[in-house]
Length: 346
Image (cartoon, rainbow, N blue to C red):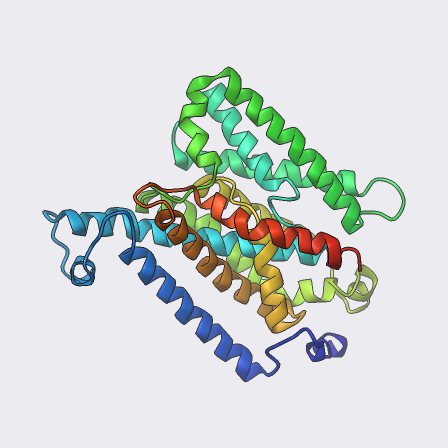
């Protein structure tokens, strides 16, 4: 482990000491709390701060403002935070496993696979409950991950970052085409899932959050447990095996965590792109290469990032709302171009 602990001296690491790392976690928690408060206070309807406070501490069912806060804004803020954390950690896991800076549940097709599975279930089985979306999203995410990794492993050199990225782009294009075809030939399916497909946390209630939370929390817990092992894997399979690590088990558990996180996030909010790409790089810039710190930082930053994006989606065209997936794409698109031009090229 001496090899691993020597990595924090990397010049790309901003926070260097353990005390500073712990302080950074506390700062991220405060920032996340601030974004949650802002999400609850801001929206299409103007609600005075005193009414927001009263809705939290002295709820009055007869008050329209209190109902908006309790039944709409609080669940929405919590869903955005959990989904943002899940997608960010899923992206960090994928980047660590594949040693690919472009790895992301959206770019590698996992979100598209989950979306196709849900749309197919709505089209063929006539399901209409967001709670049932979760099962089909897991199936689609898992199958897509297997296909993309298998295609990227073909030929000489095994699953290189470039080959996996190309395979993910090709599979994503195919899955999106199939999804679009289903929606074109069946208008009812389009009406049921079109806003969900754009990526949105609007209209999600606490019952849906309670149904998805066990999967999200289980995936987050499993990912955090694997932090040390993922750090070792980044040094290469041979080094990890030399240090006594069972790389097959680690990769399998990390894949399970990724499917749990990405599948449940897509089931709840639809395919929201680029969070799993952008946020892990932000966390890595702050804390270096140690996944024991990258993963918790990514979870907190990803949660705050999606909550802020949702606030922007509500306020840009107020009183109209944009799907939050559009706002994340505005940030993630240019960052993806930067990674392709500089990081992957190097």
